[in-house]
Image 1 (spheres, helix red, strand yellow):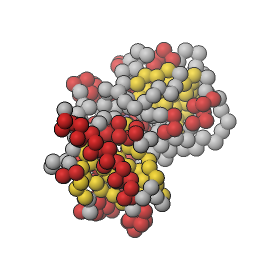
Image 2: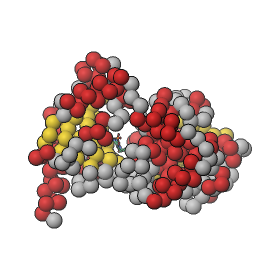
Image 3: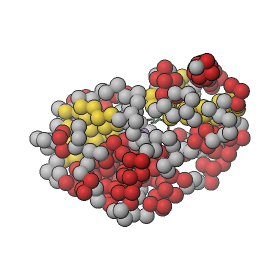
Length: 321
Ligand code: AMP
Ligand code: MN
Ligand code: MN
C-alpha cells in the first residue's frame, strides 16, 4: 500500500481499533486515522474502538467519540487495526474484525504474522503512527491529525530517544510541528508527568529491584497486594521499565506486575545485545527487538526464572560469537 485511499474505494462504513491496554502509539494512530477519514472522506461512516484510553490523551481532538464497547451488531465494509501485533491482541472489536468485508492491518511489530487481508507492516519503523503518516497525503495532515501522530511518535520513541528513531522520524516530526501545536506541553503532560502515587510506586520498584546474570539483567516487580496497597493498576506503571533499562551495565530490563493472582504482565527492554522480541514470542508474547511484552501465568519466581533463562542463553550466544 502506498496511500490509504487505495483501500477506501466503495467503502461506506469503516471501523478502526487498536490493541488491549492501548498505549500512546495505539491511541495516536487510531485517532489520527479516524480524524483523517472524518475530515477528508465525510461520506464514510467511521467508528473508532479503544479499550478505555488514559486521560493523558485528552488533548487529542474527538477523543470523547471513542467507542469503548462493541455492543451493536454491525458488519463494516472495512476494518483497520493500528499498532496491533496479532489477532488475539485486538481488544474489544475482534468480532467486527472477523465479520468485516475487508480488513487492513497497519503496524510496526517485527513479530506481526500478517493477520489481515491487507497487511502494511514495517518492522523497522519506530511507531505505527510513523507508518500511518506514510499512507497519508502530507498536505492533508492538518493540526488535528498531526497532534495524535506526534503523540504516538513521542510515546514509542521515548521522545526520540530509542534506537528505532531514524532521520525520517525526525523529518516527519518536523513536518508535524509546522502545523503549530504546543509540543512541549504534549511531551510533559502525556509522557513525563507522573502523579505523586505513580512516583512512589516507581521508587518502590527501583528500591526493591534485583540484579541477575552478573548485573546484565535487572528485574523489578509488583505483586497484586502491592498494587492494591497503592491503589494503582497497569495504567499507572508507564516509565518504570524504561528507568530500569537505564541502570549502568544492564543489557536487559524486566518489569512485571500481577494482573490477577498468578498472572503476570511482563515488559522487556534491551540495550541492543539481546533480541527481546524473540524471547517474548517464545513465551507467547510479541513486540520489537528492544521492547517486547508477554502475558504469563505462574508464580513470580517461576516467571522471572524462565525468562531470565532465555536471556542468559542469548547472552551466552553473544559471548561465543
Ligand atoms: P510493553 O512492555 O507493554 O510496553 O510492550 C512493549 C511492546 O511489546 C509493545 O510494542 C507492545 O505492543 C508489545 N507487546 C506487549 N505485550 C505483548 C503481548 N502480550 N503480545 C504481543 N505483543 C506485546
Ligand atoms: Mn502499542
Ligand atoms: Mn507501537
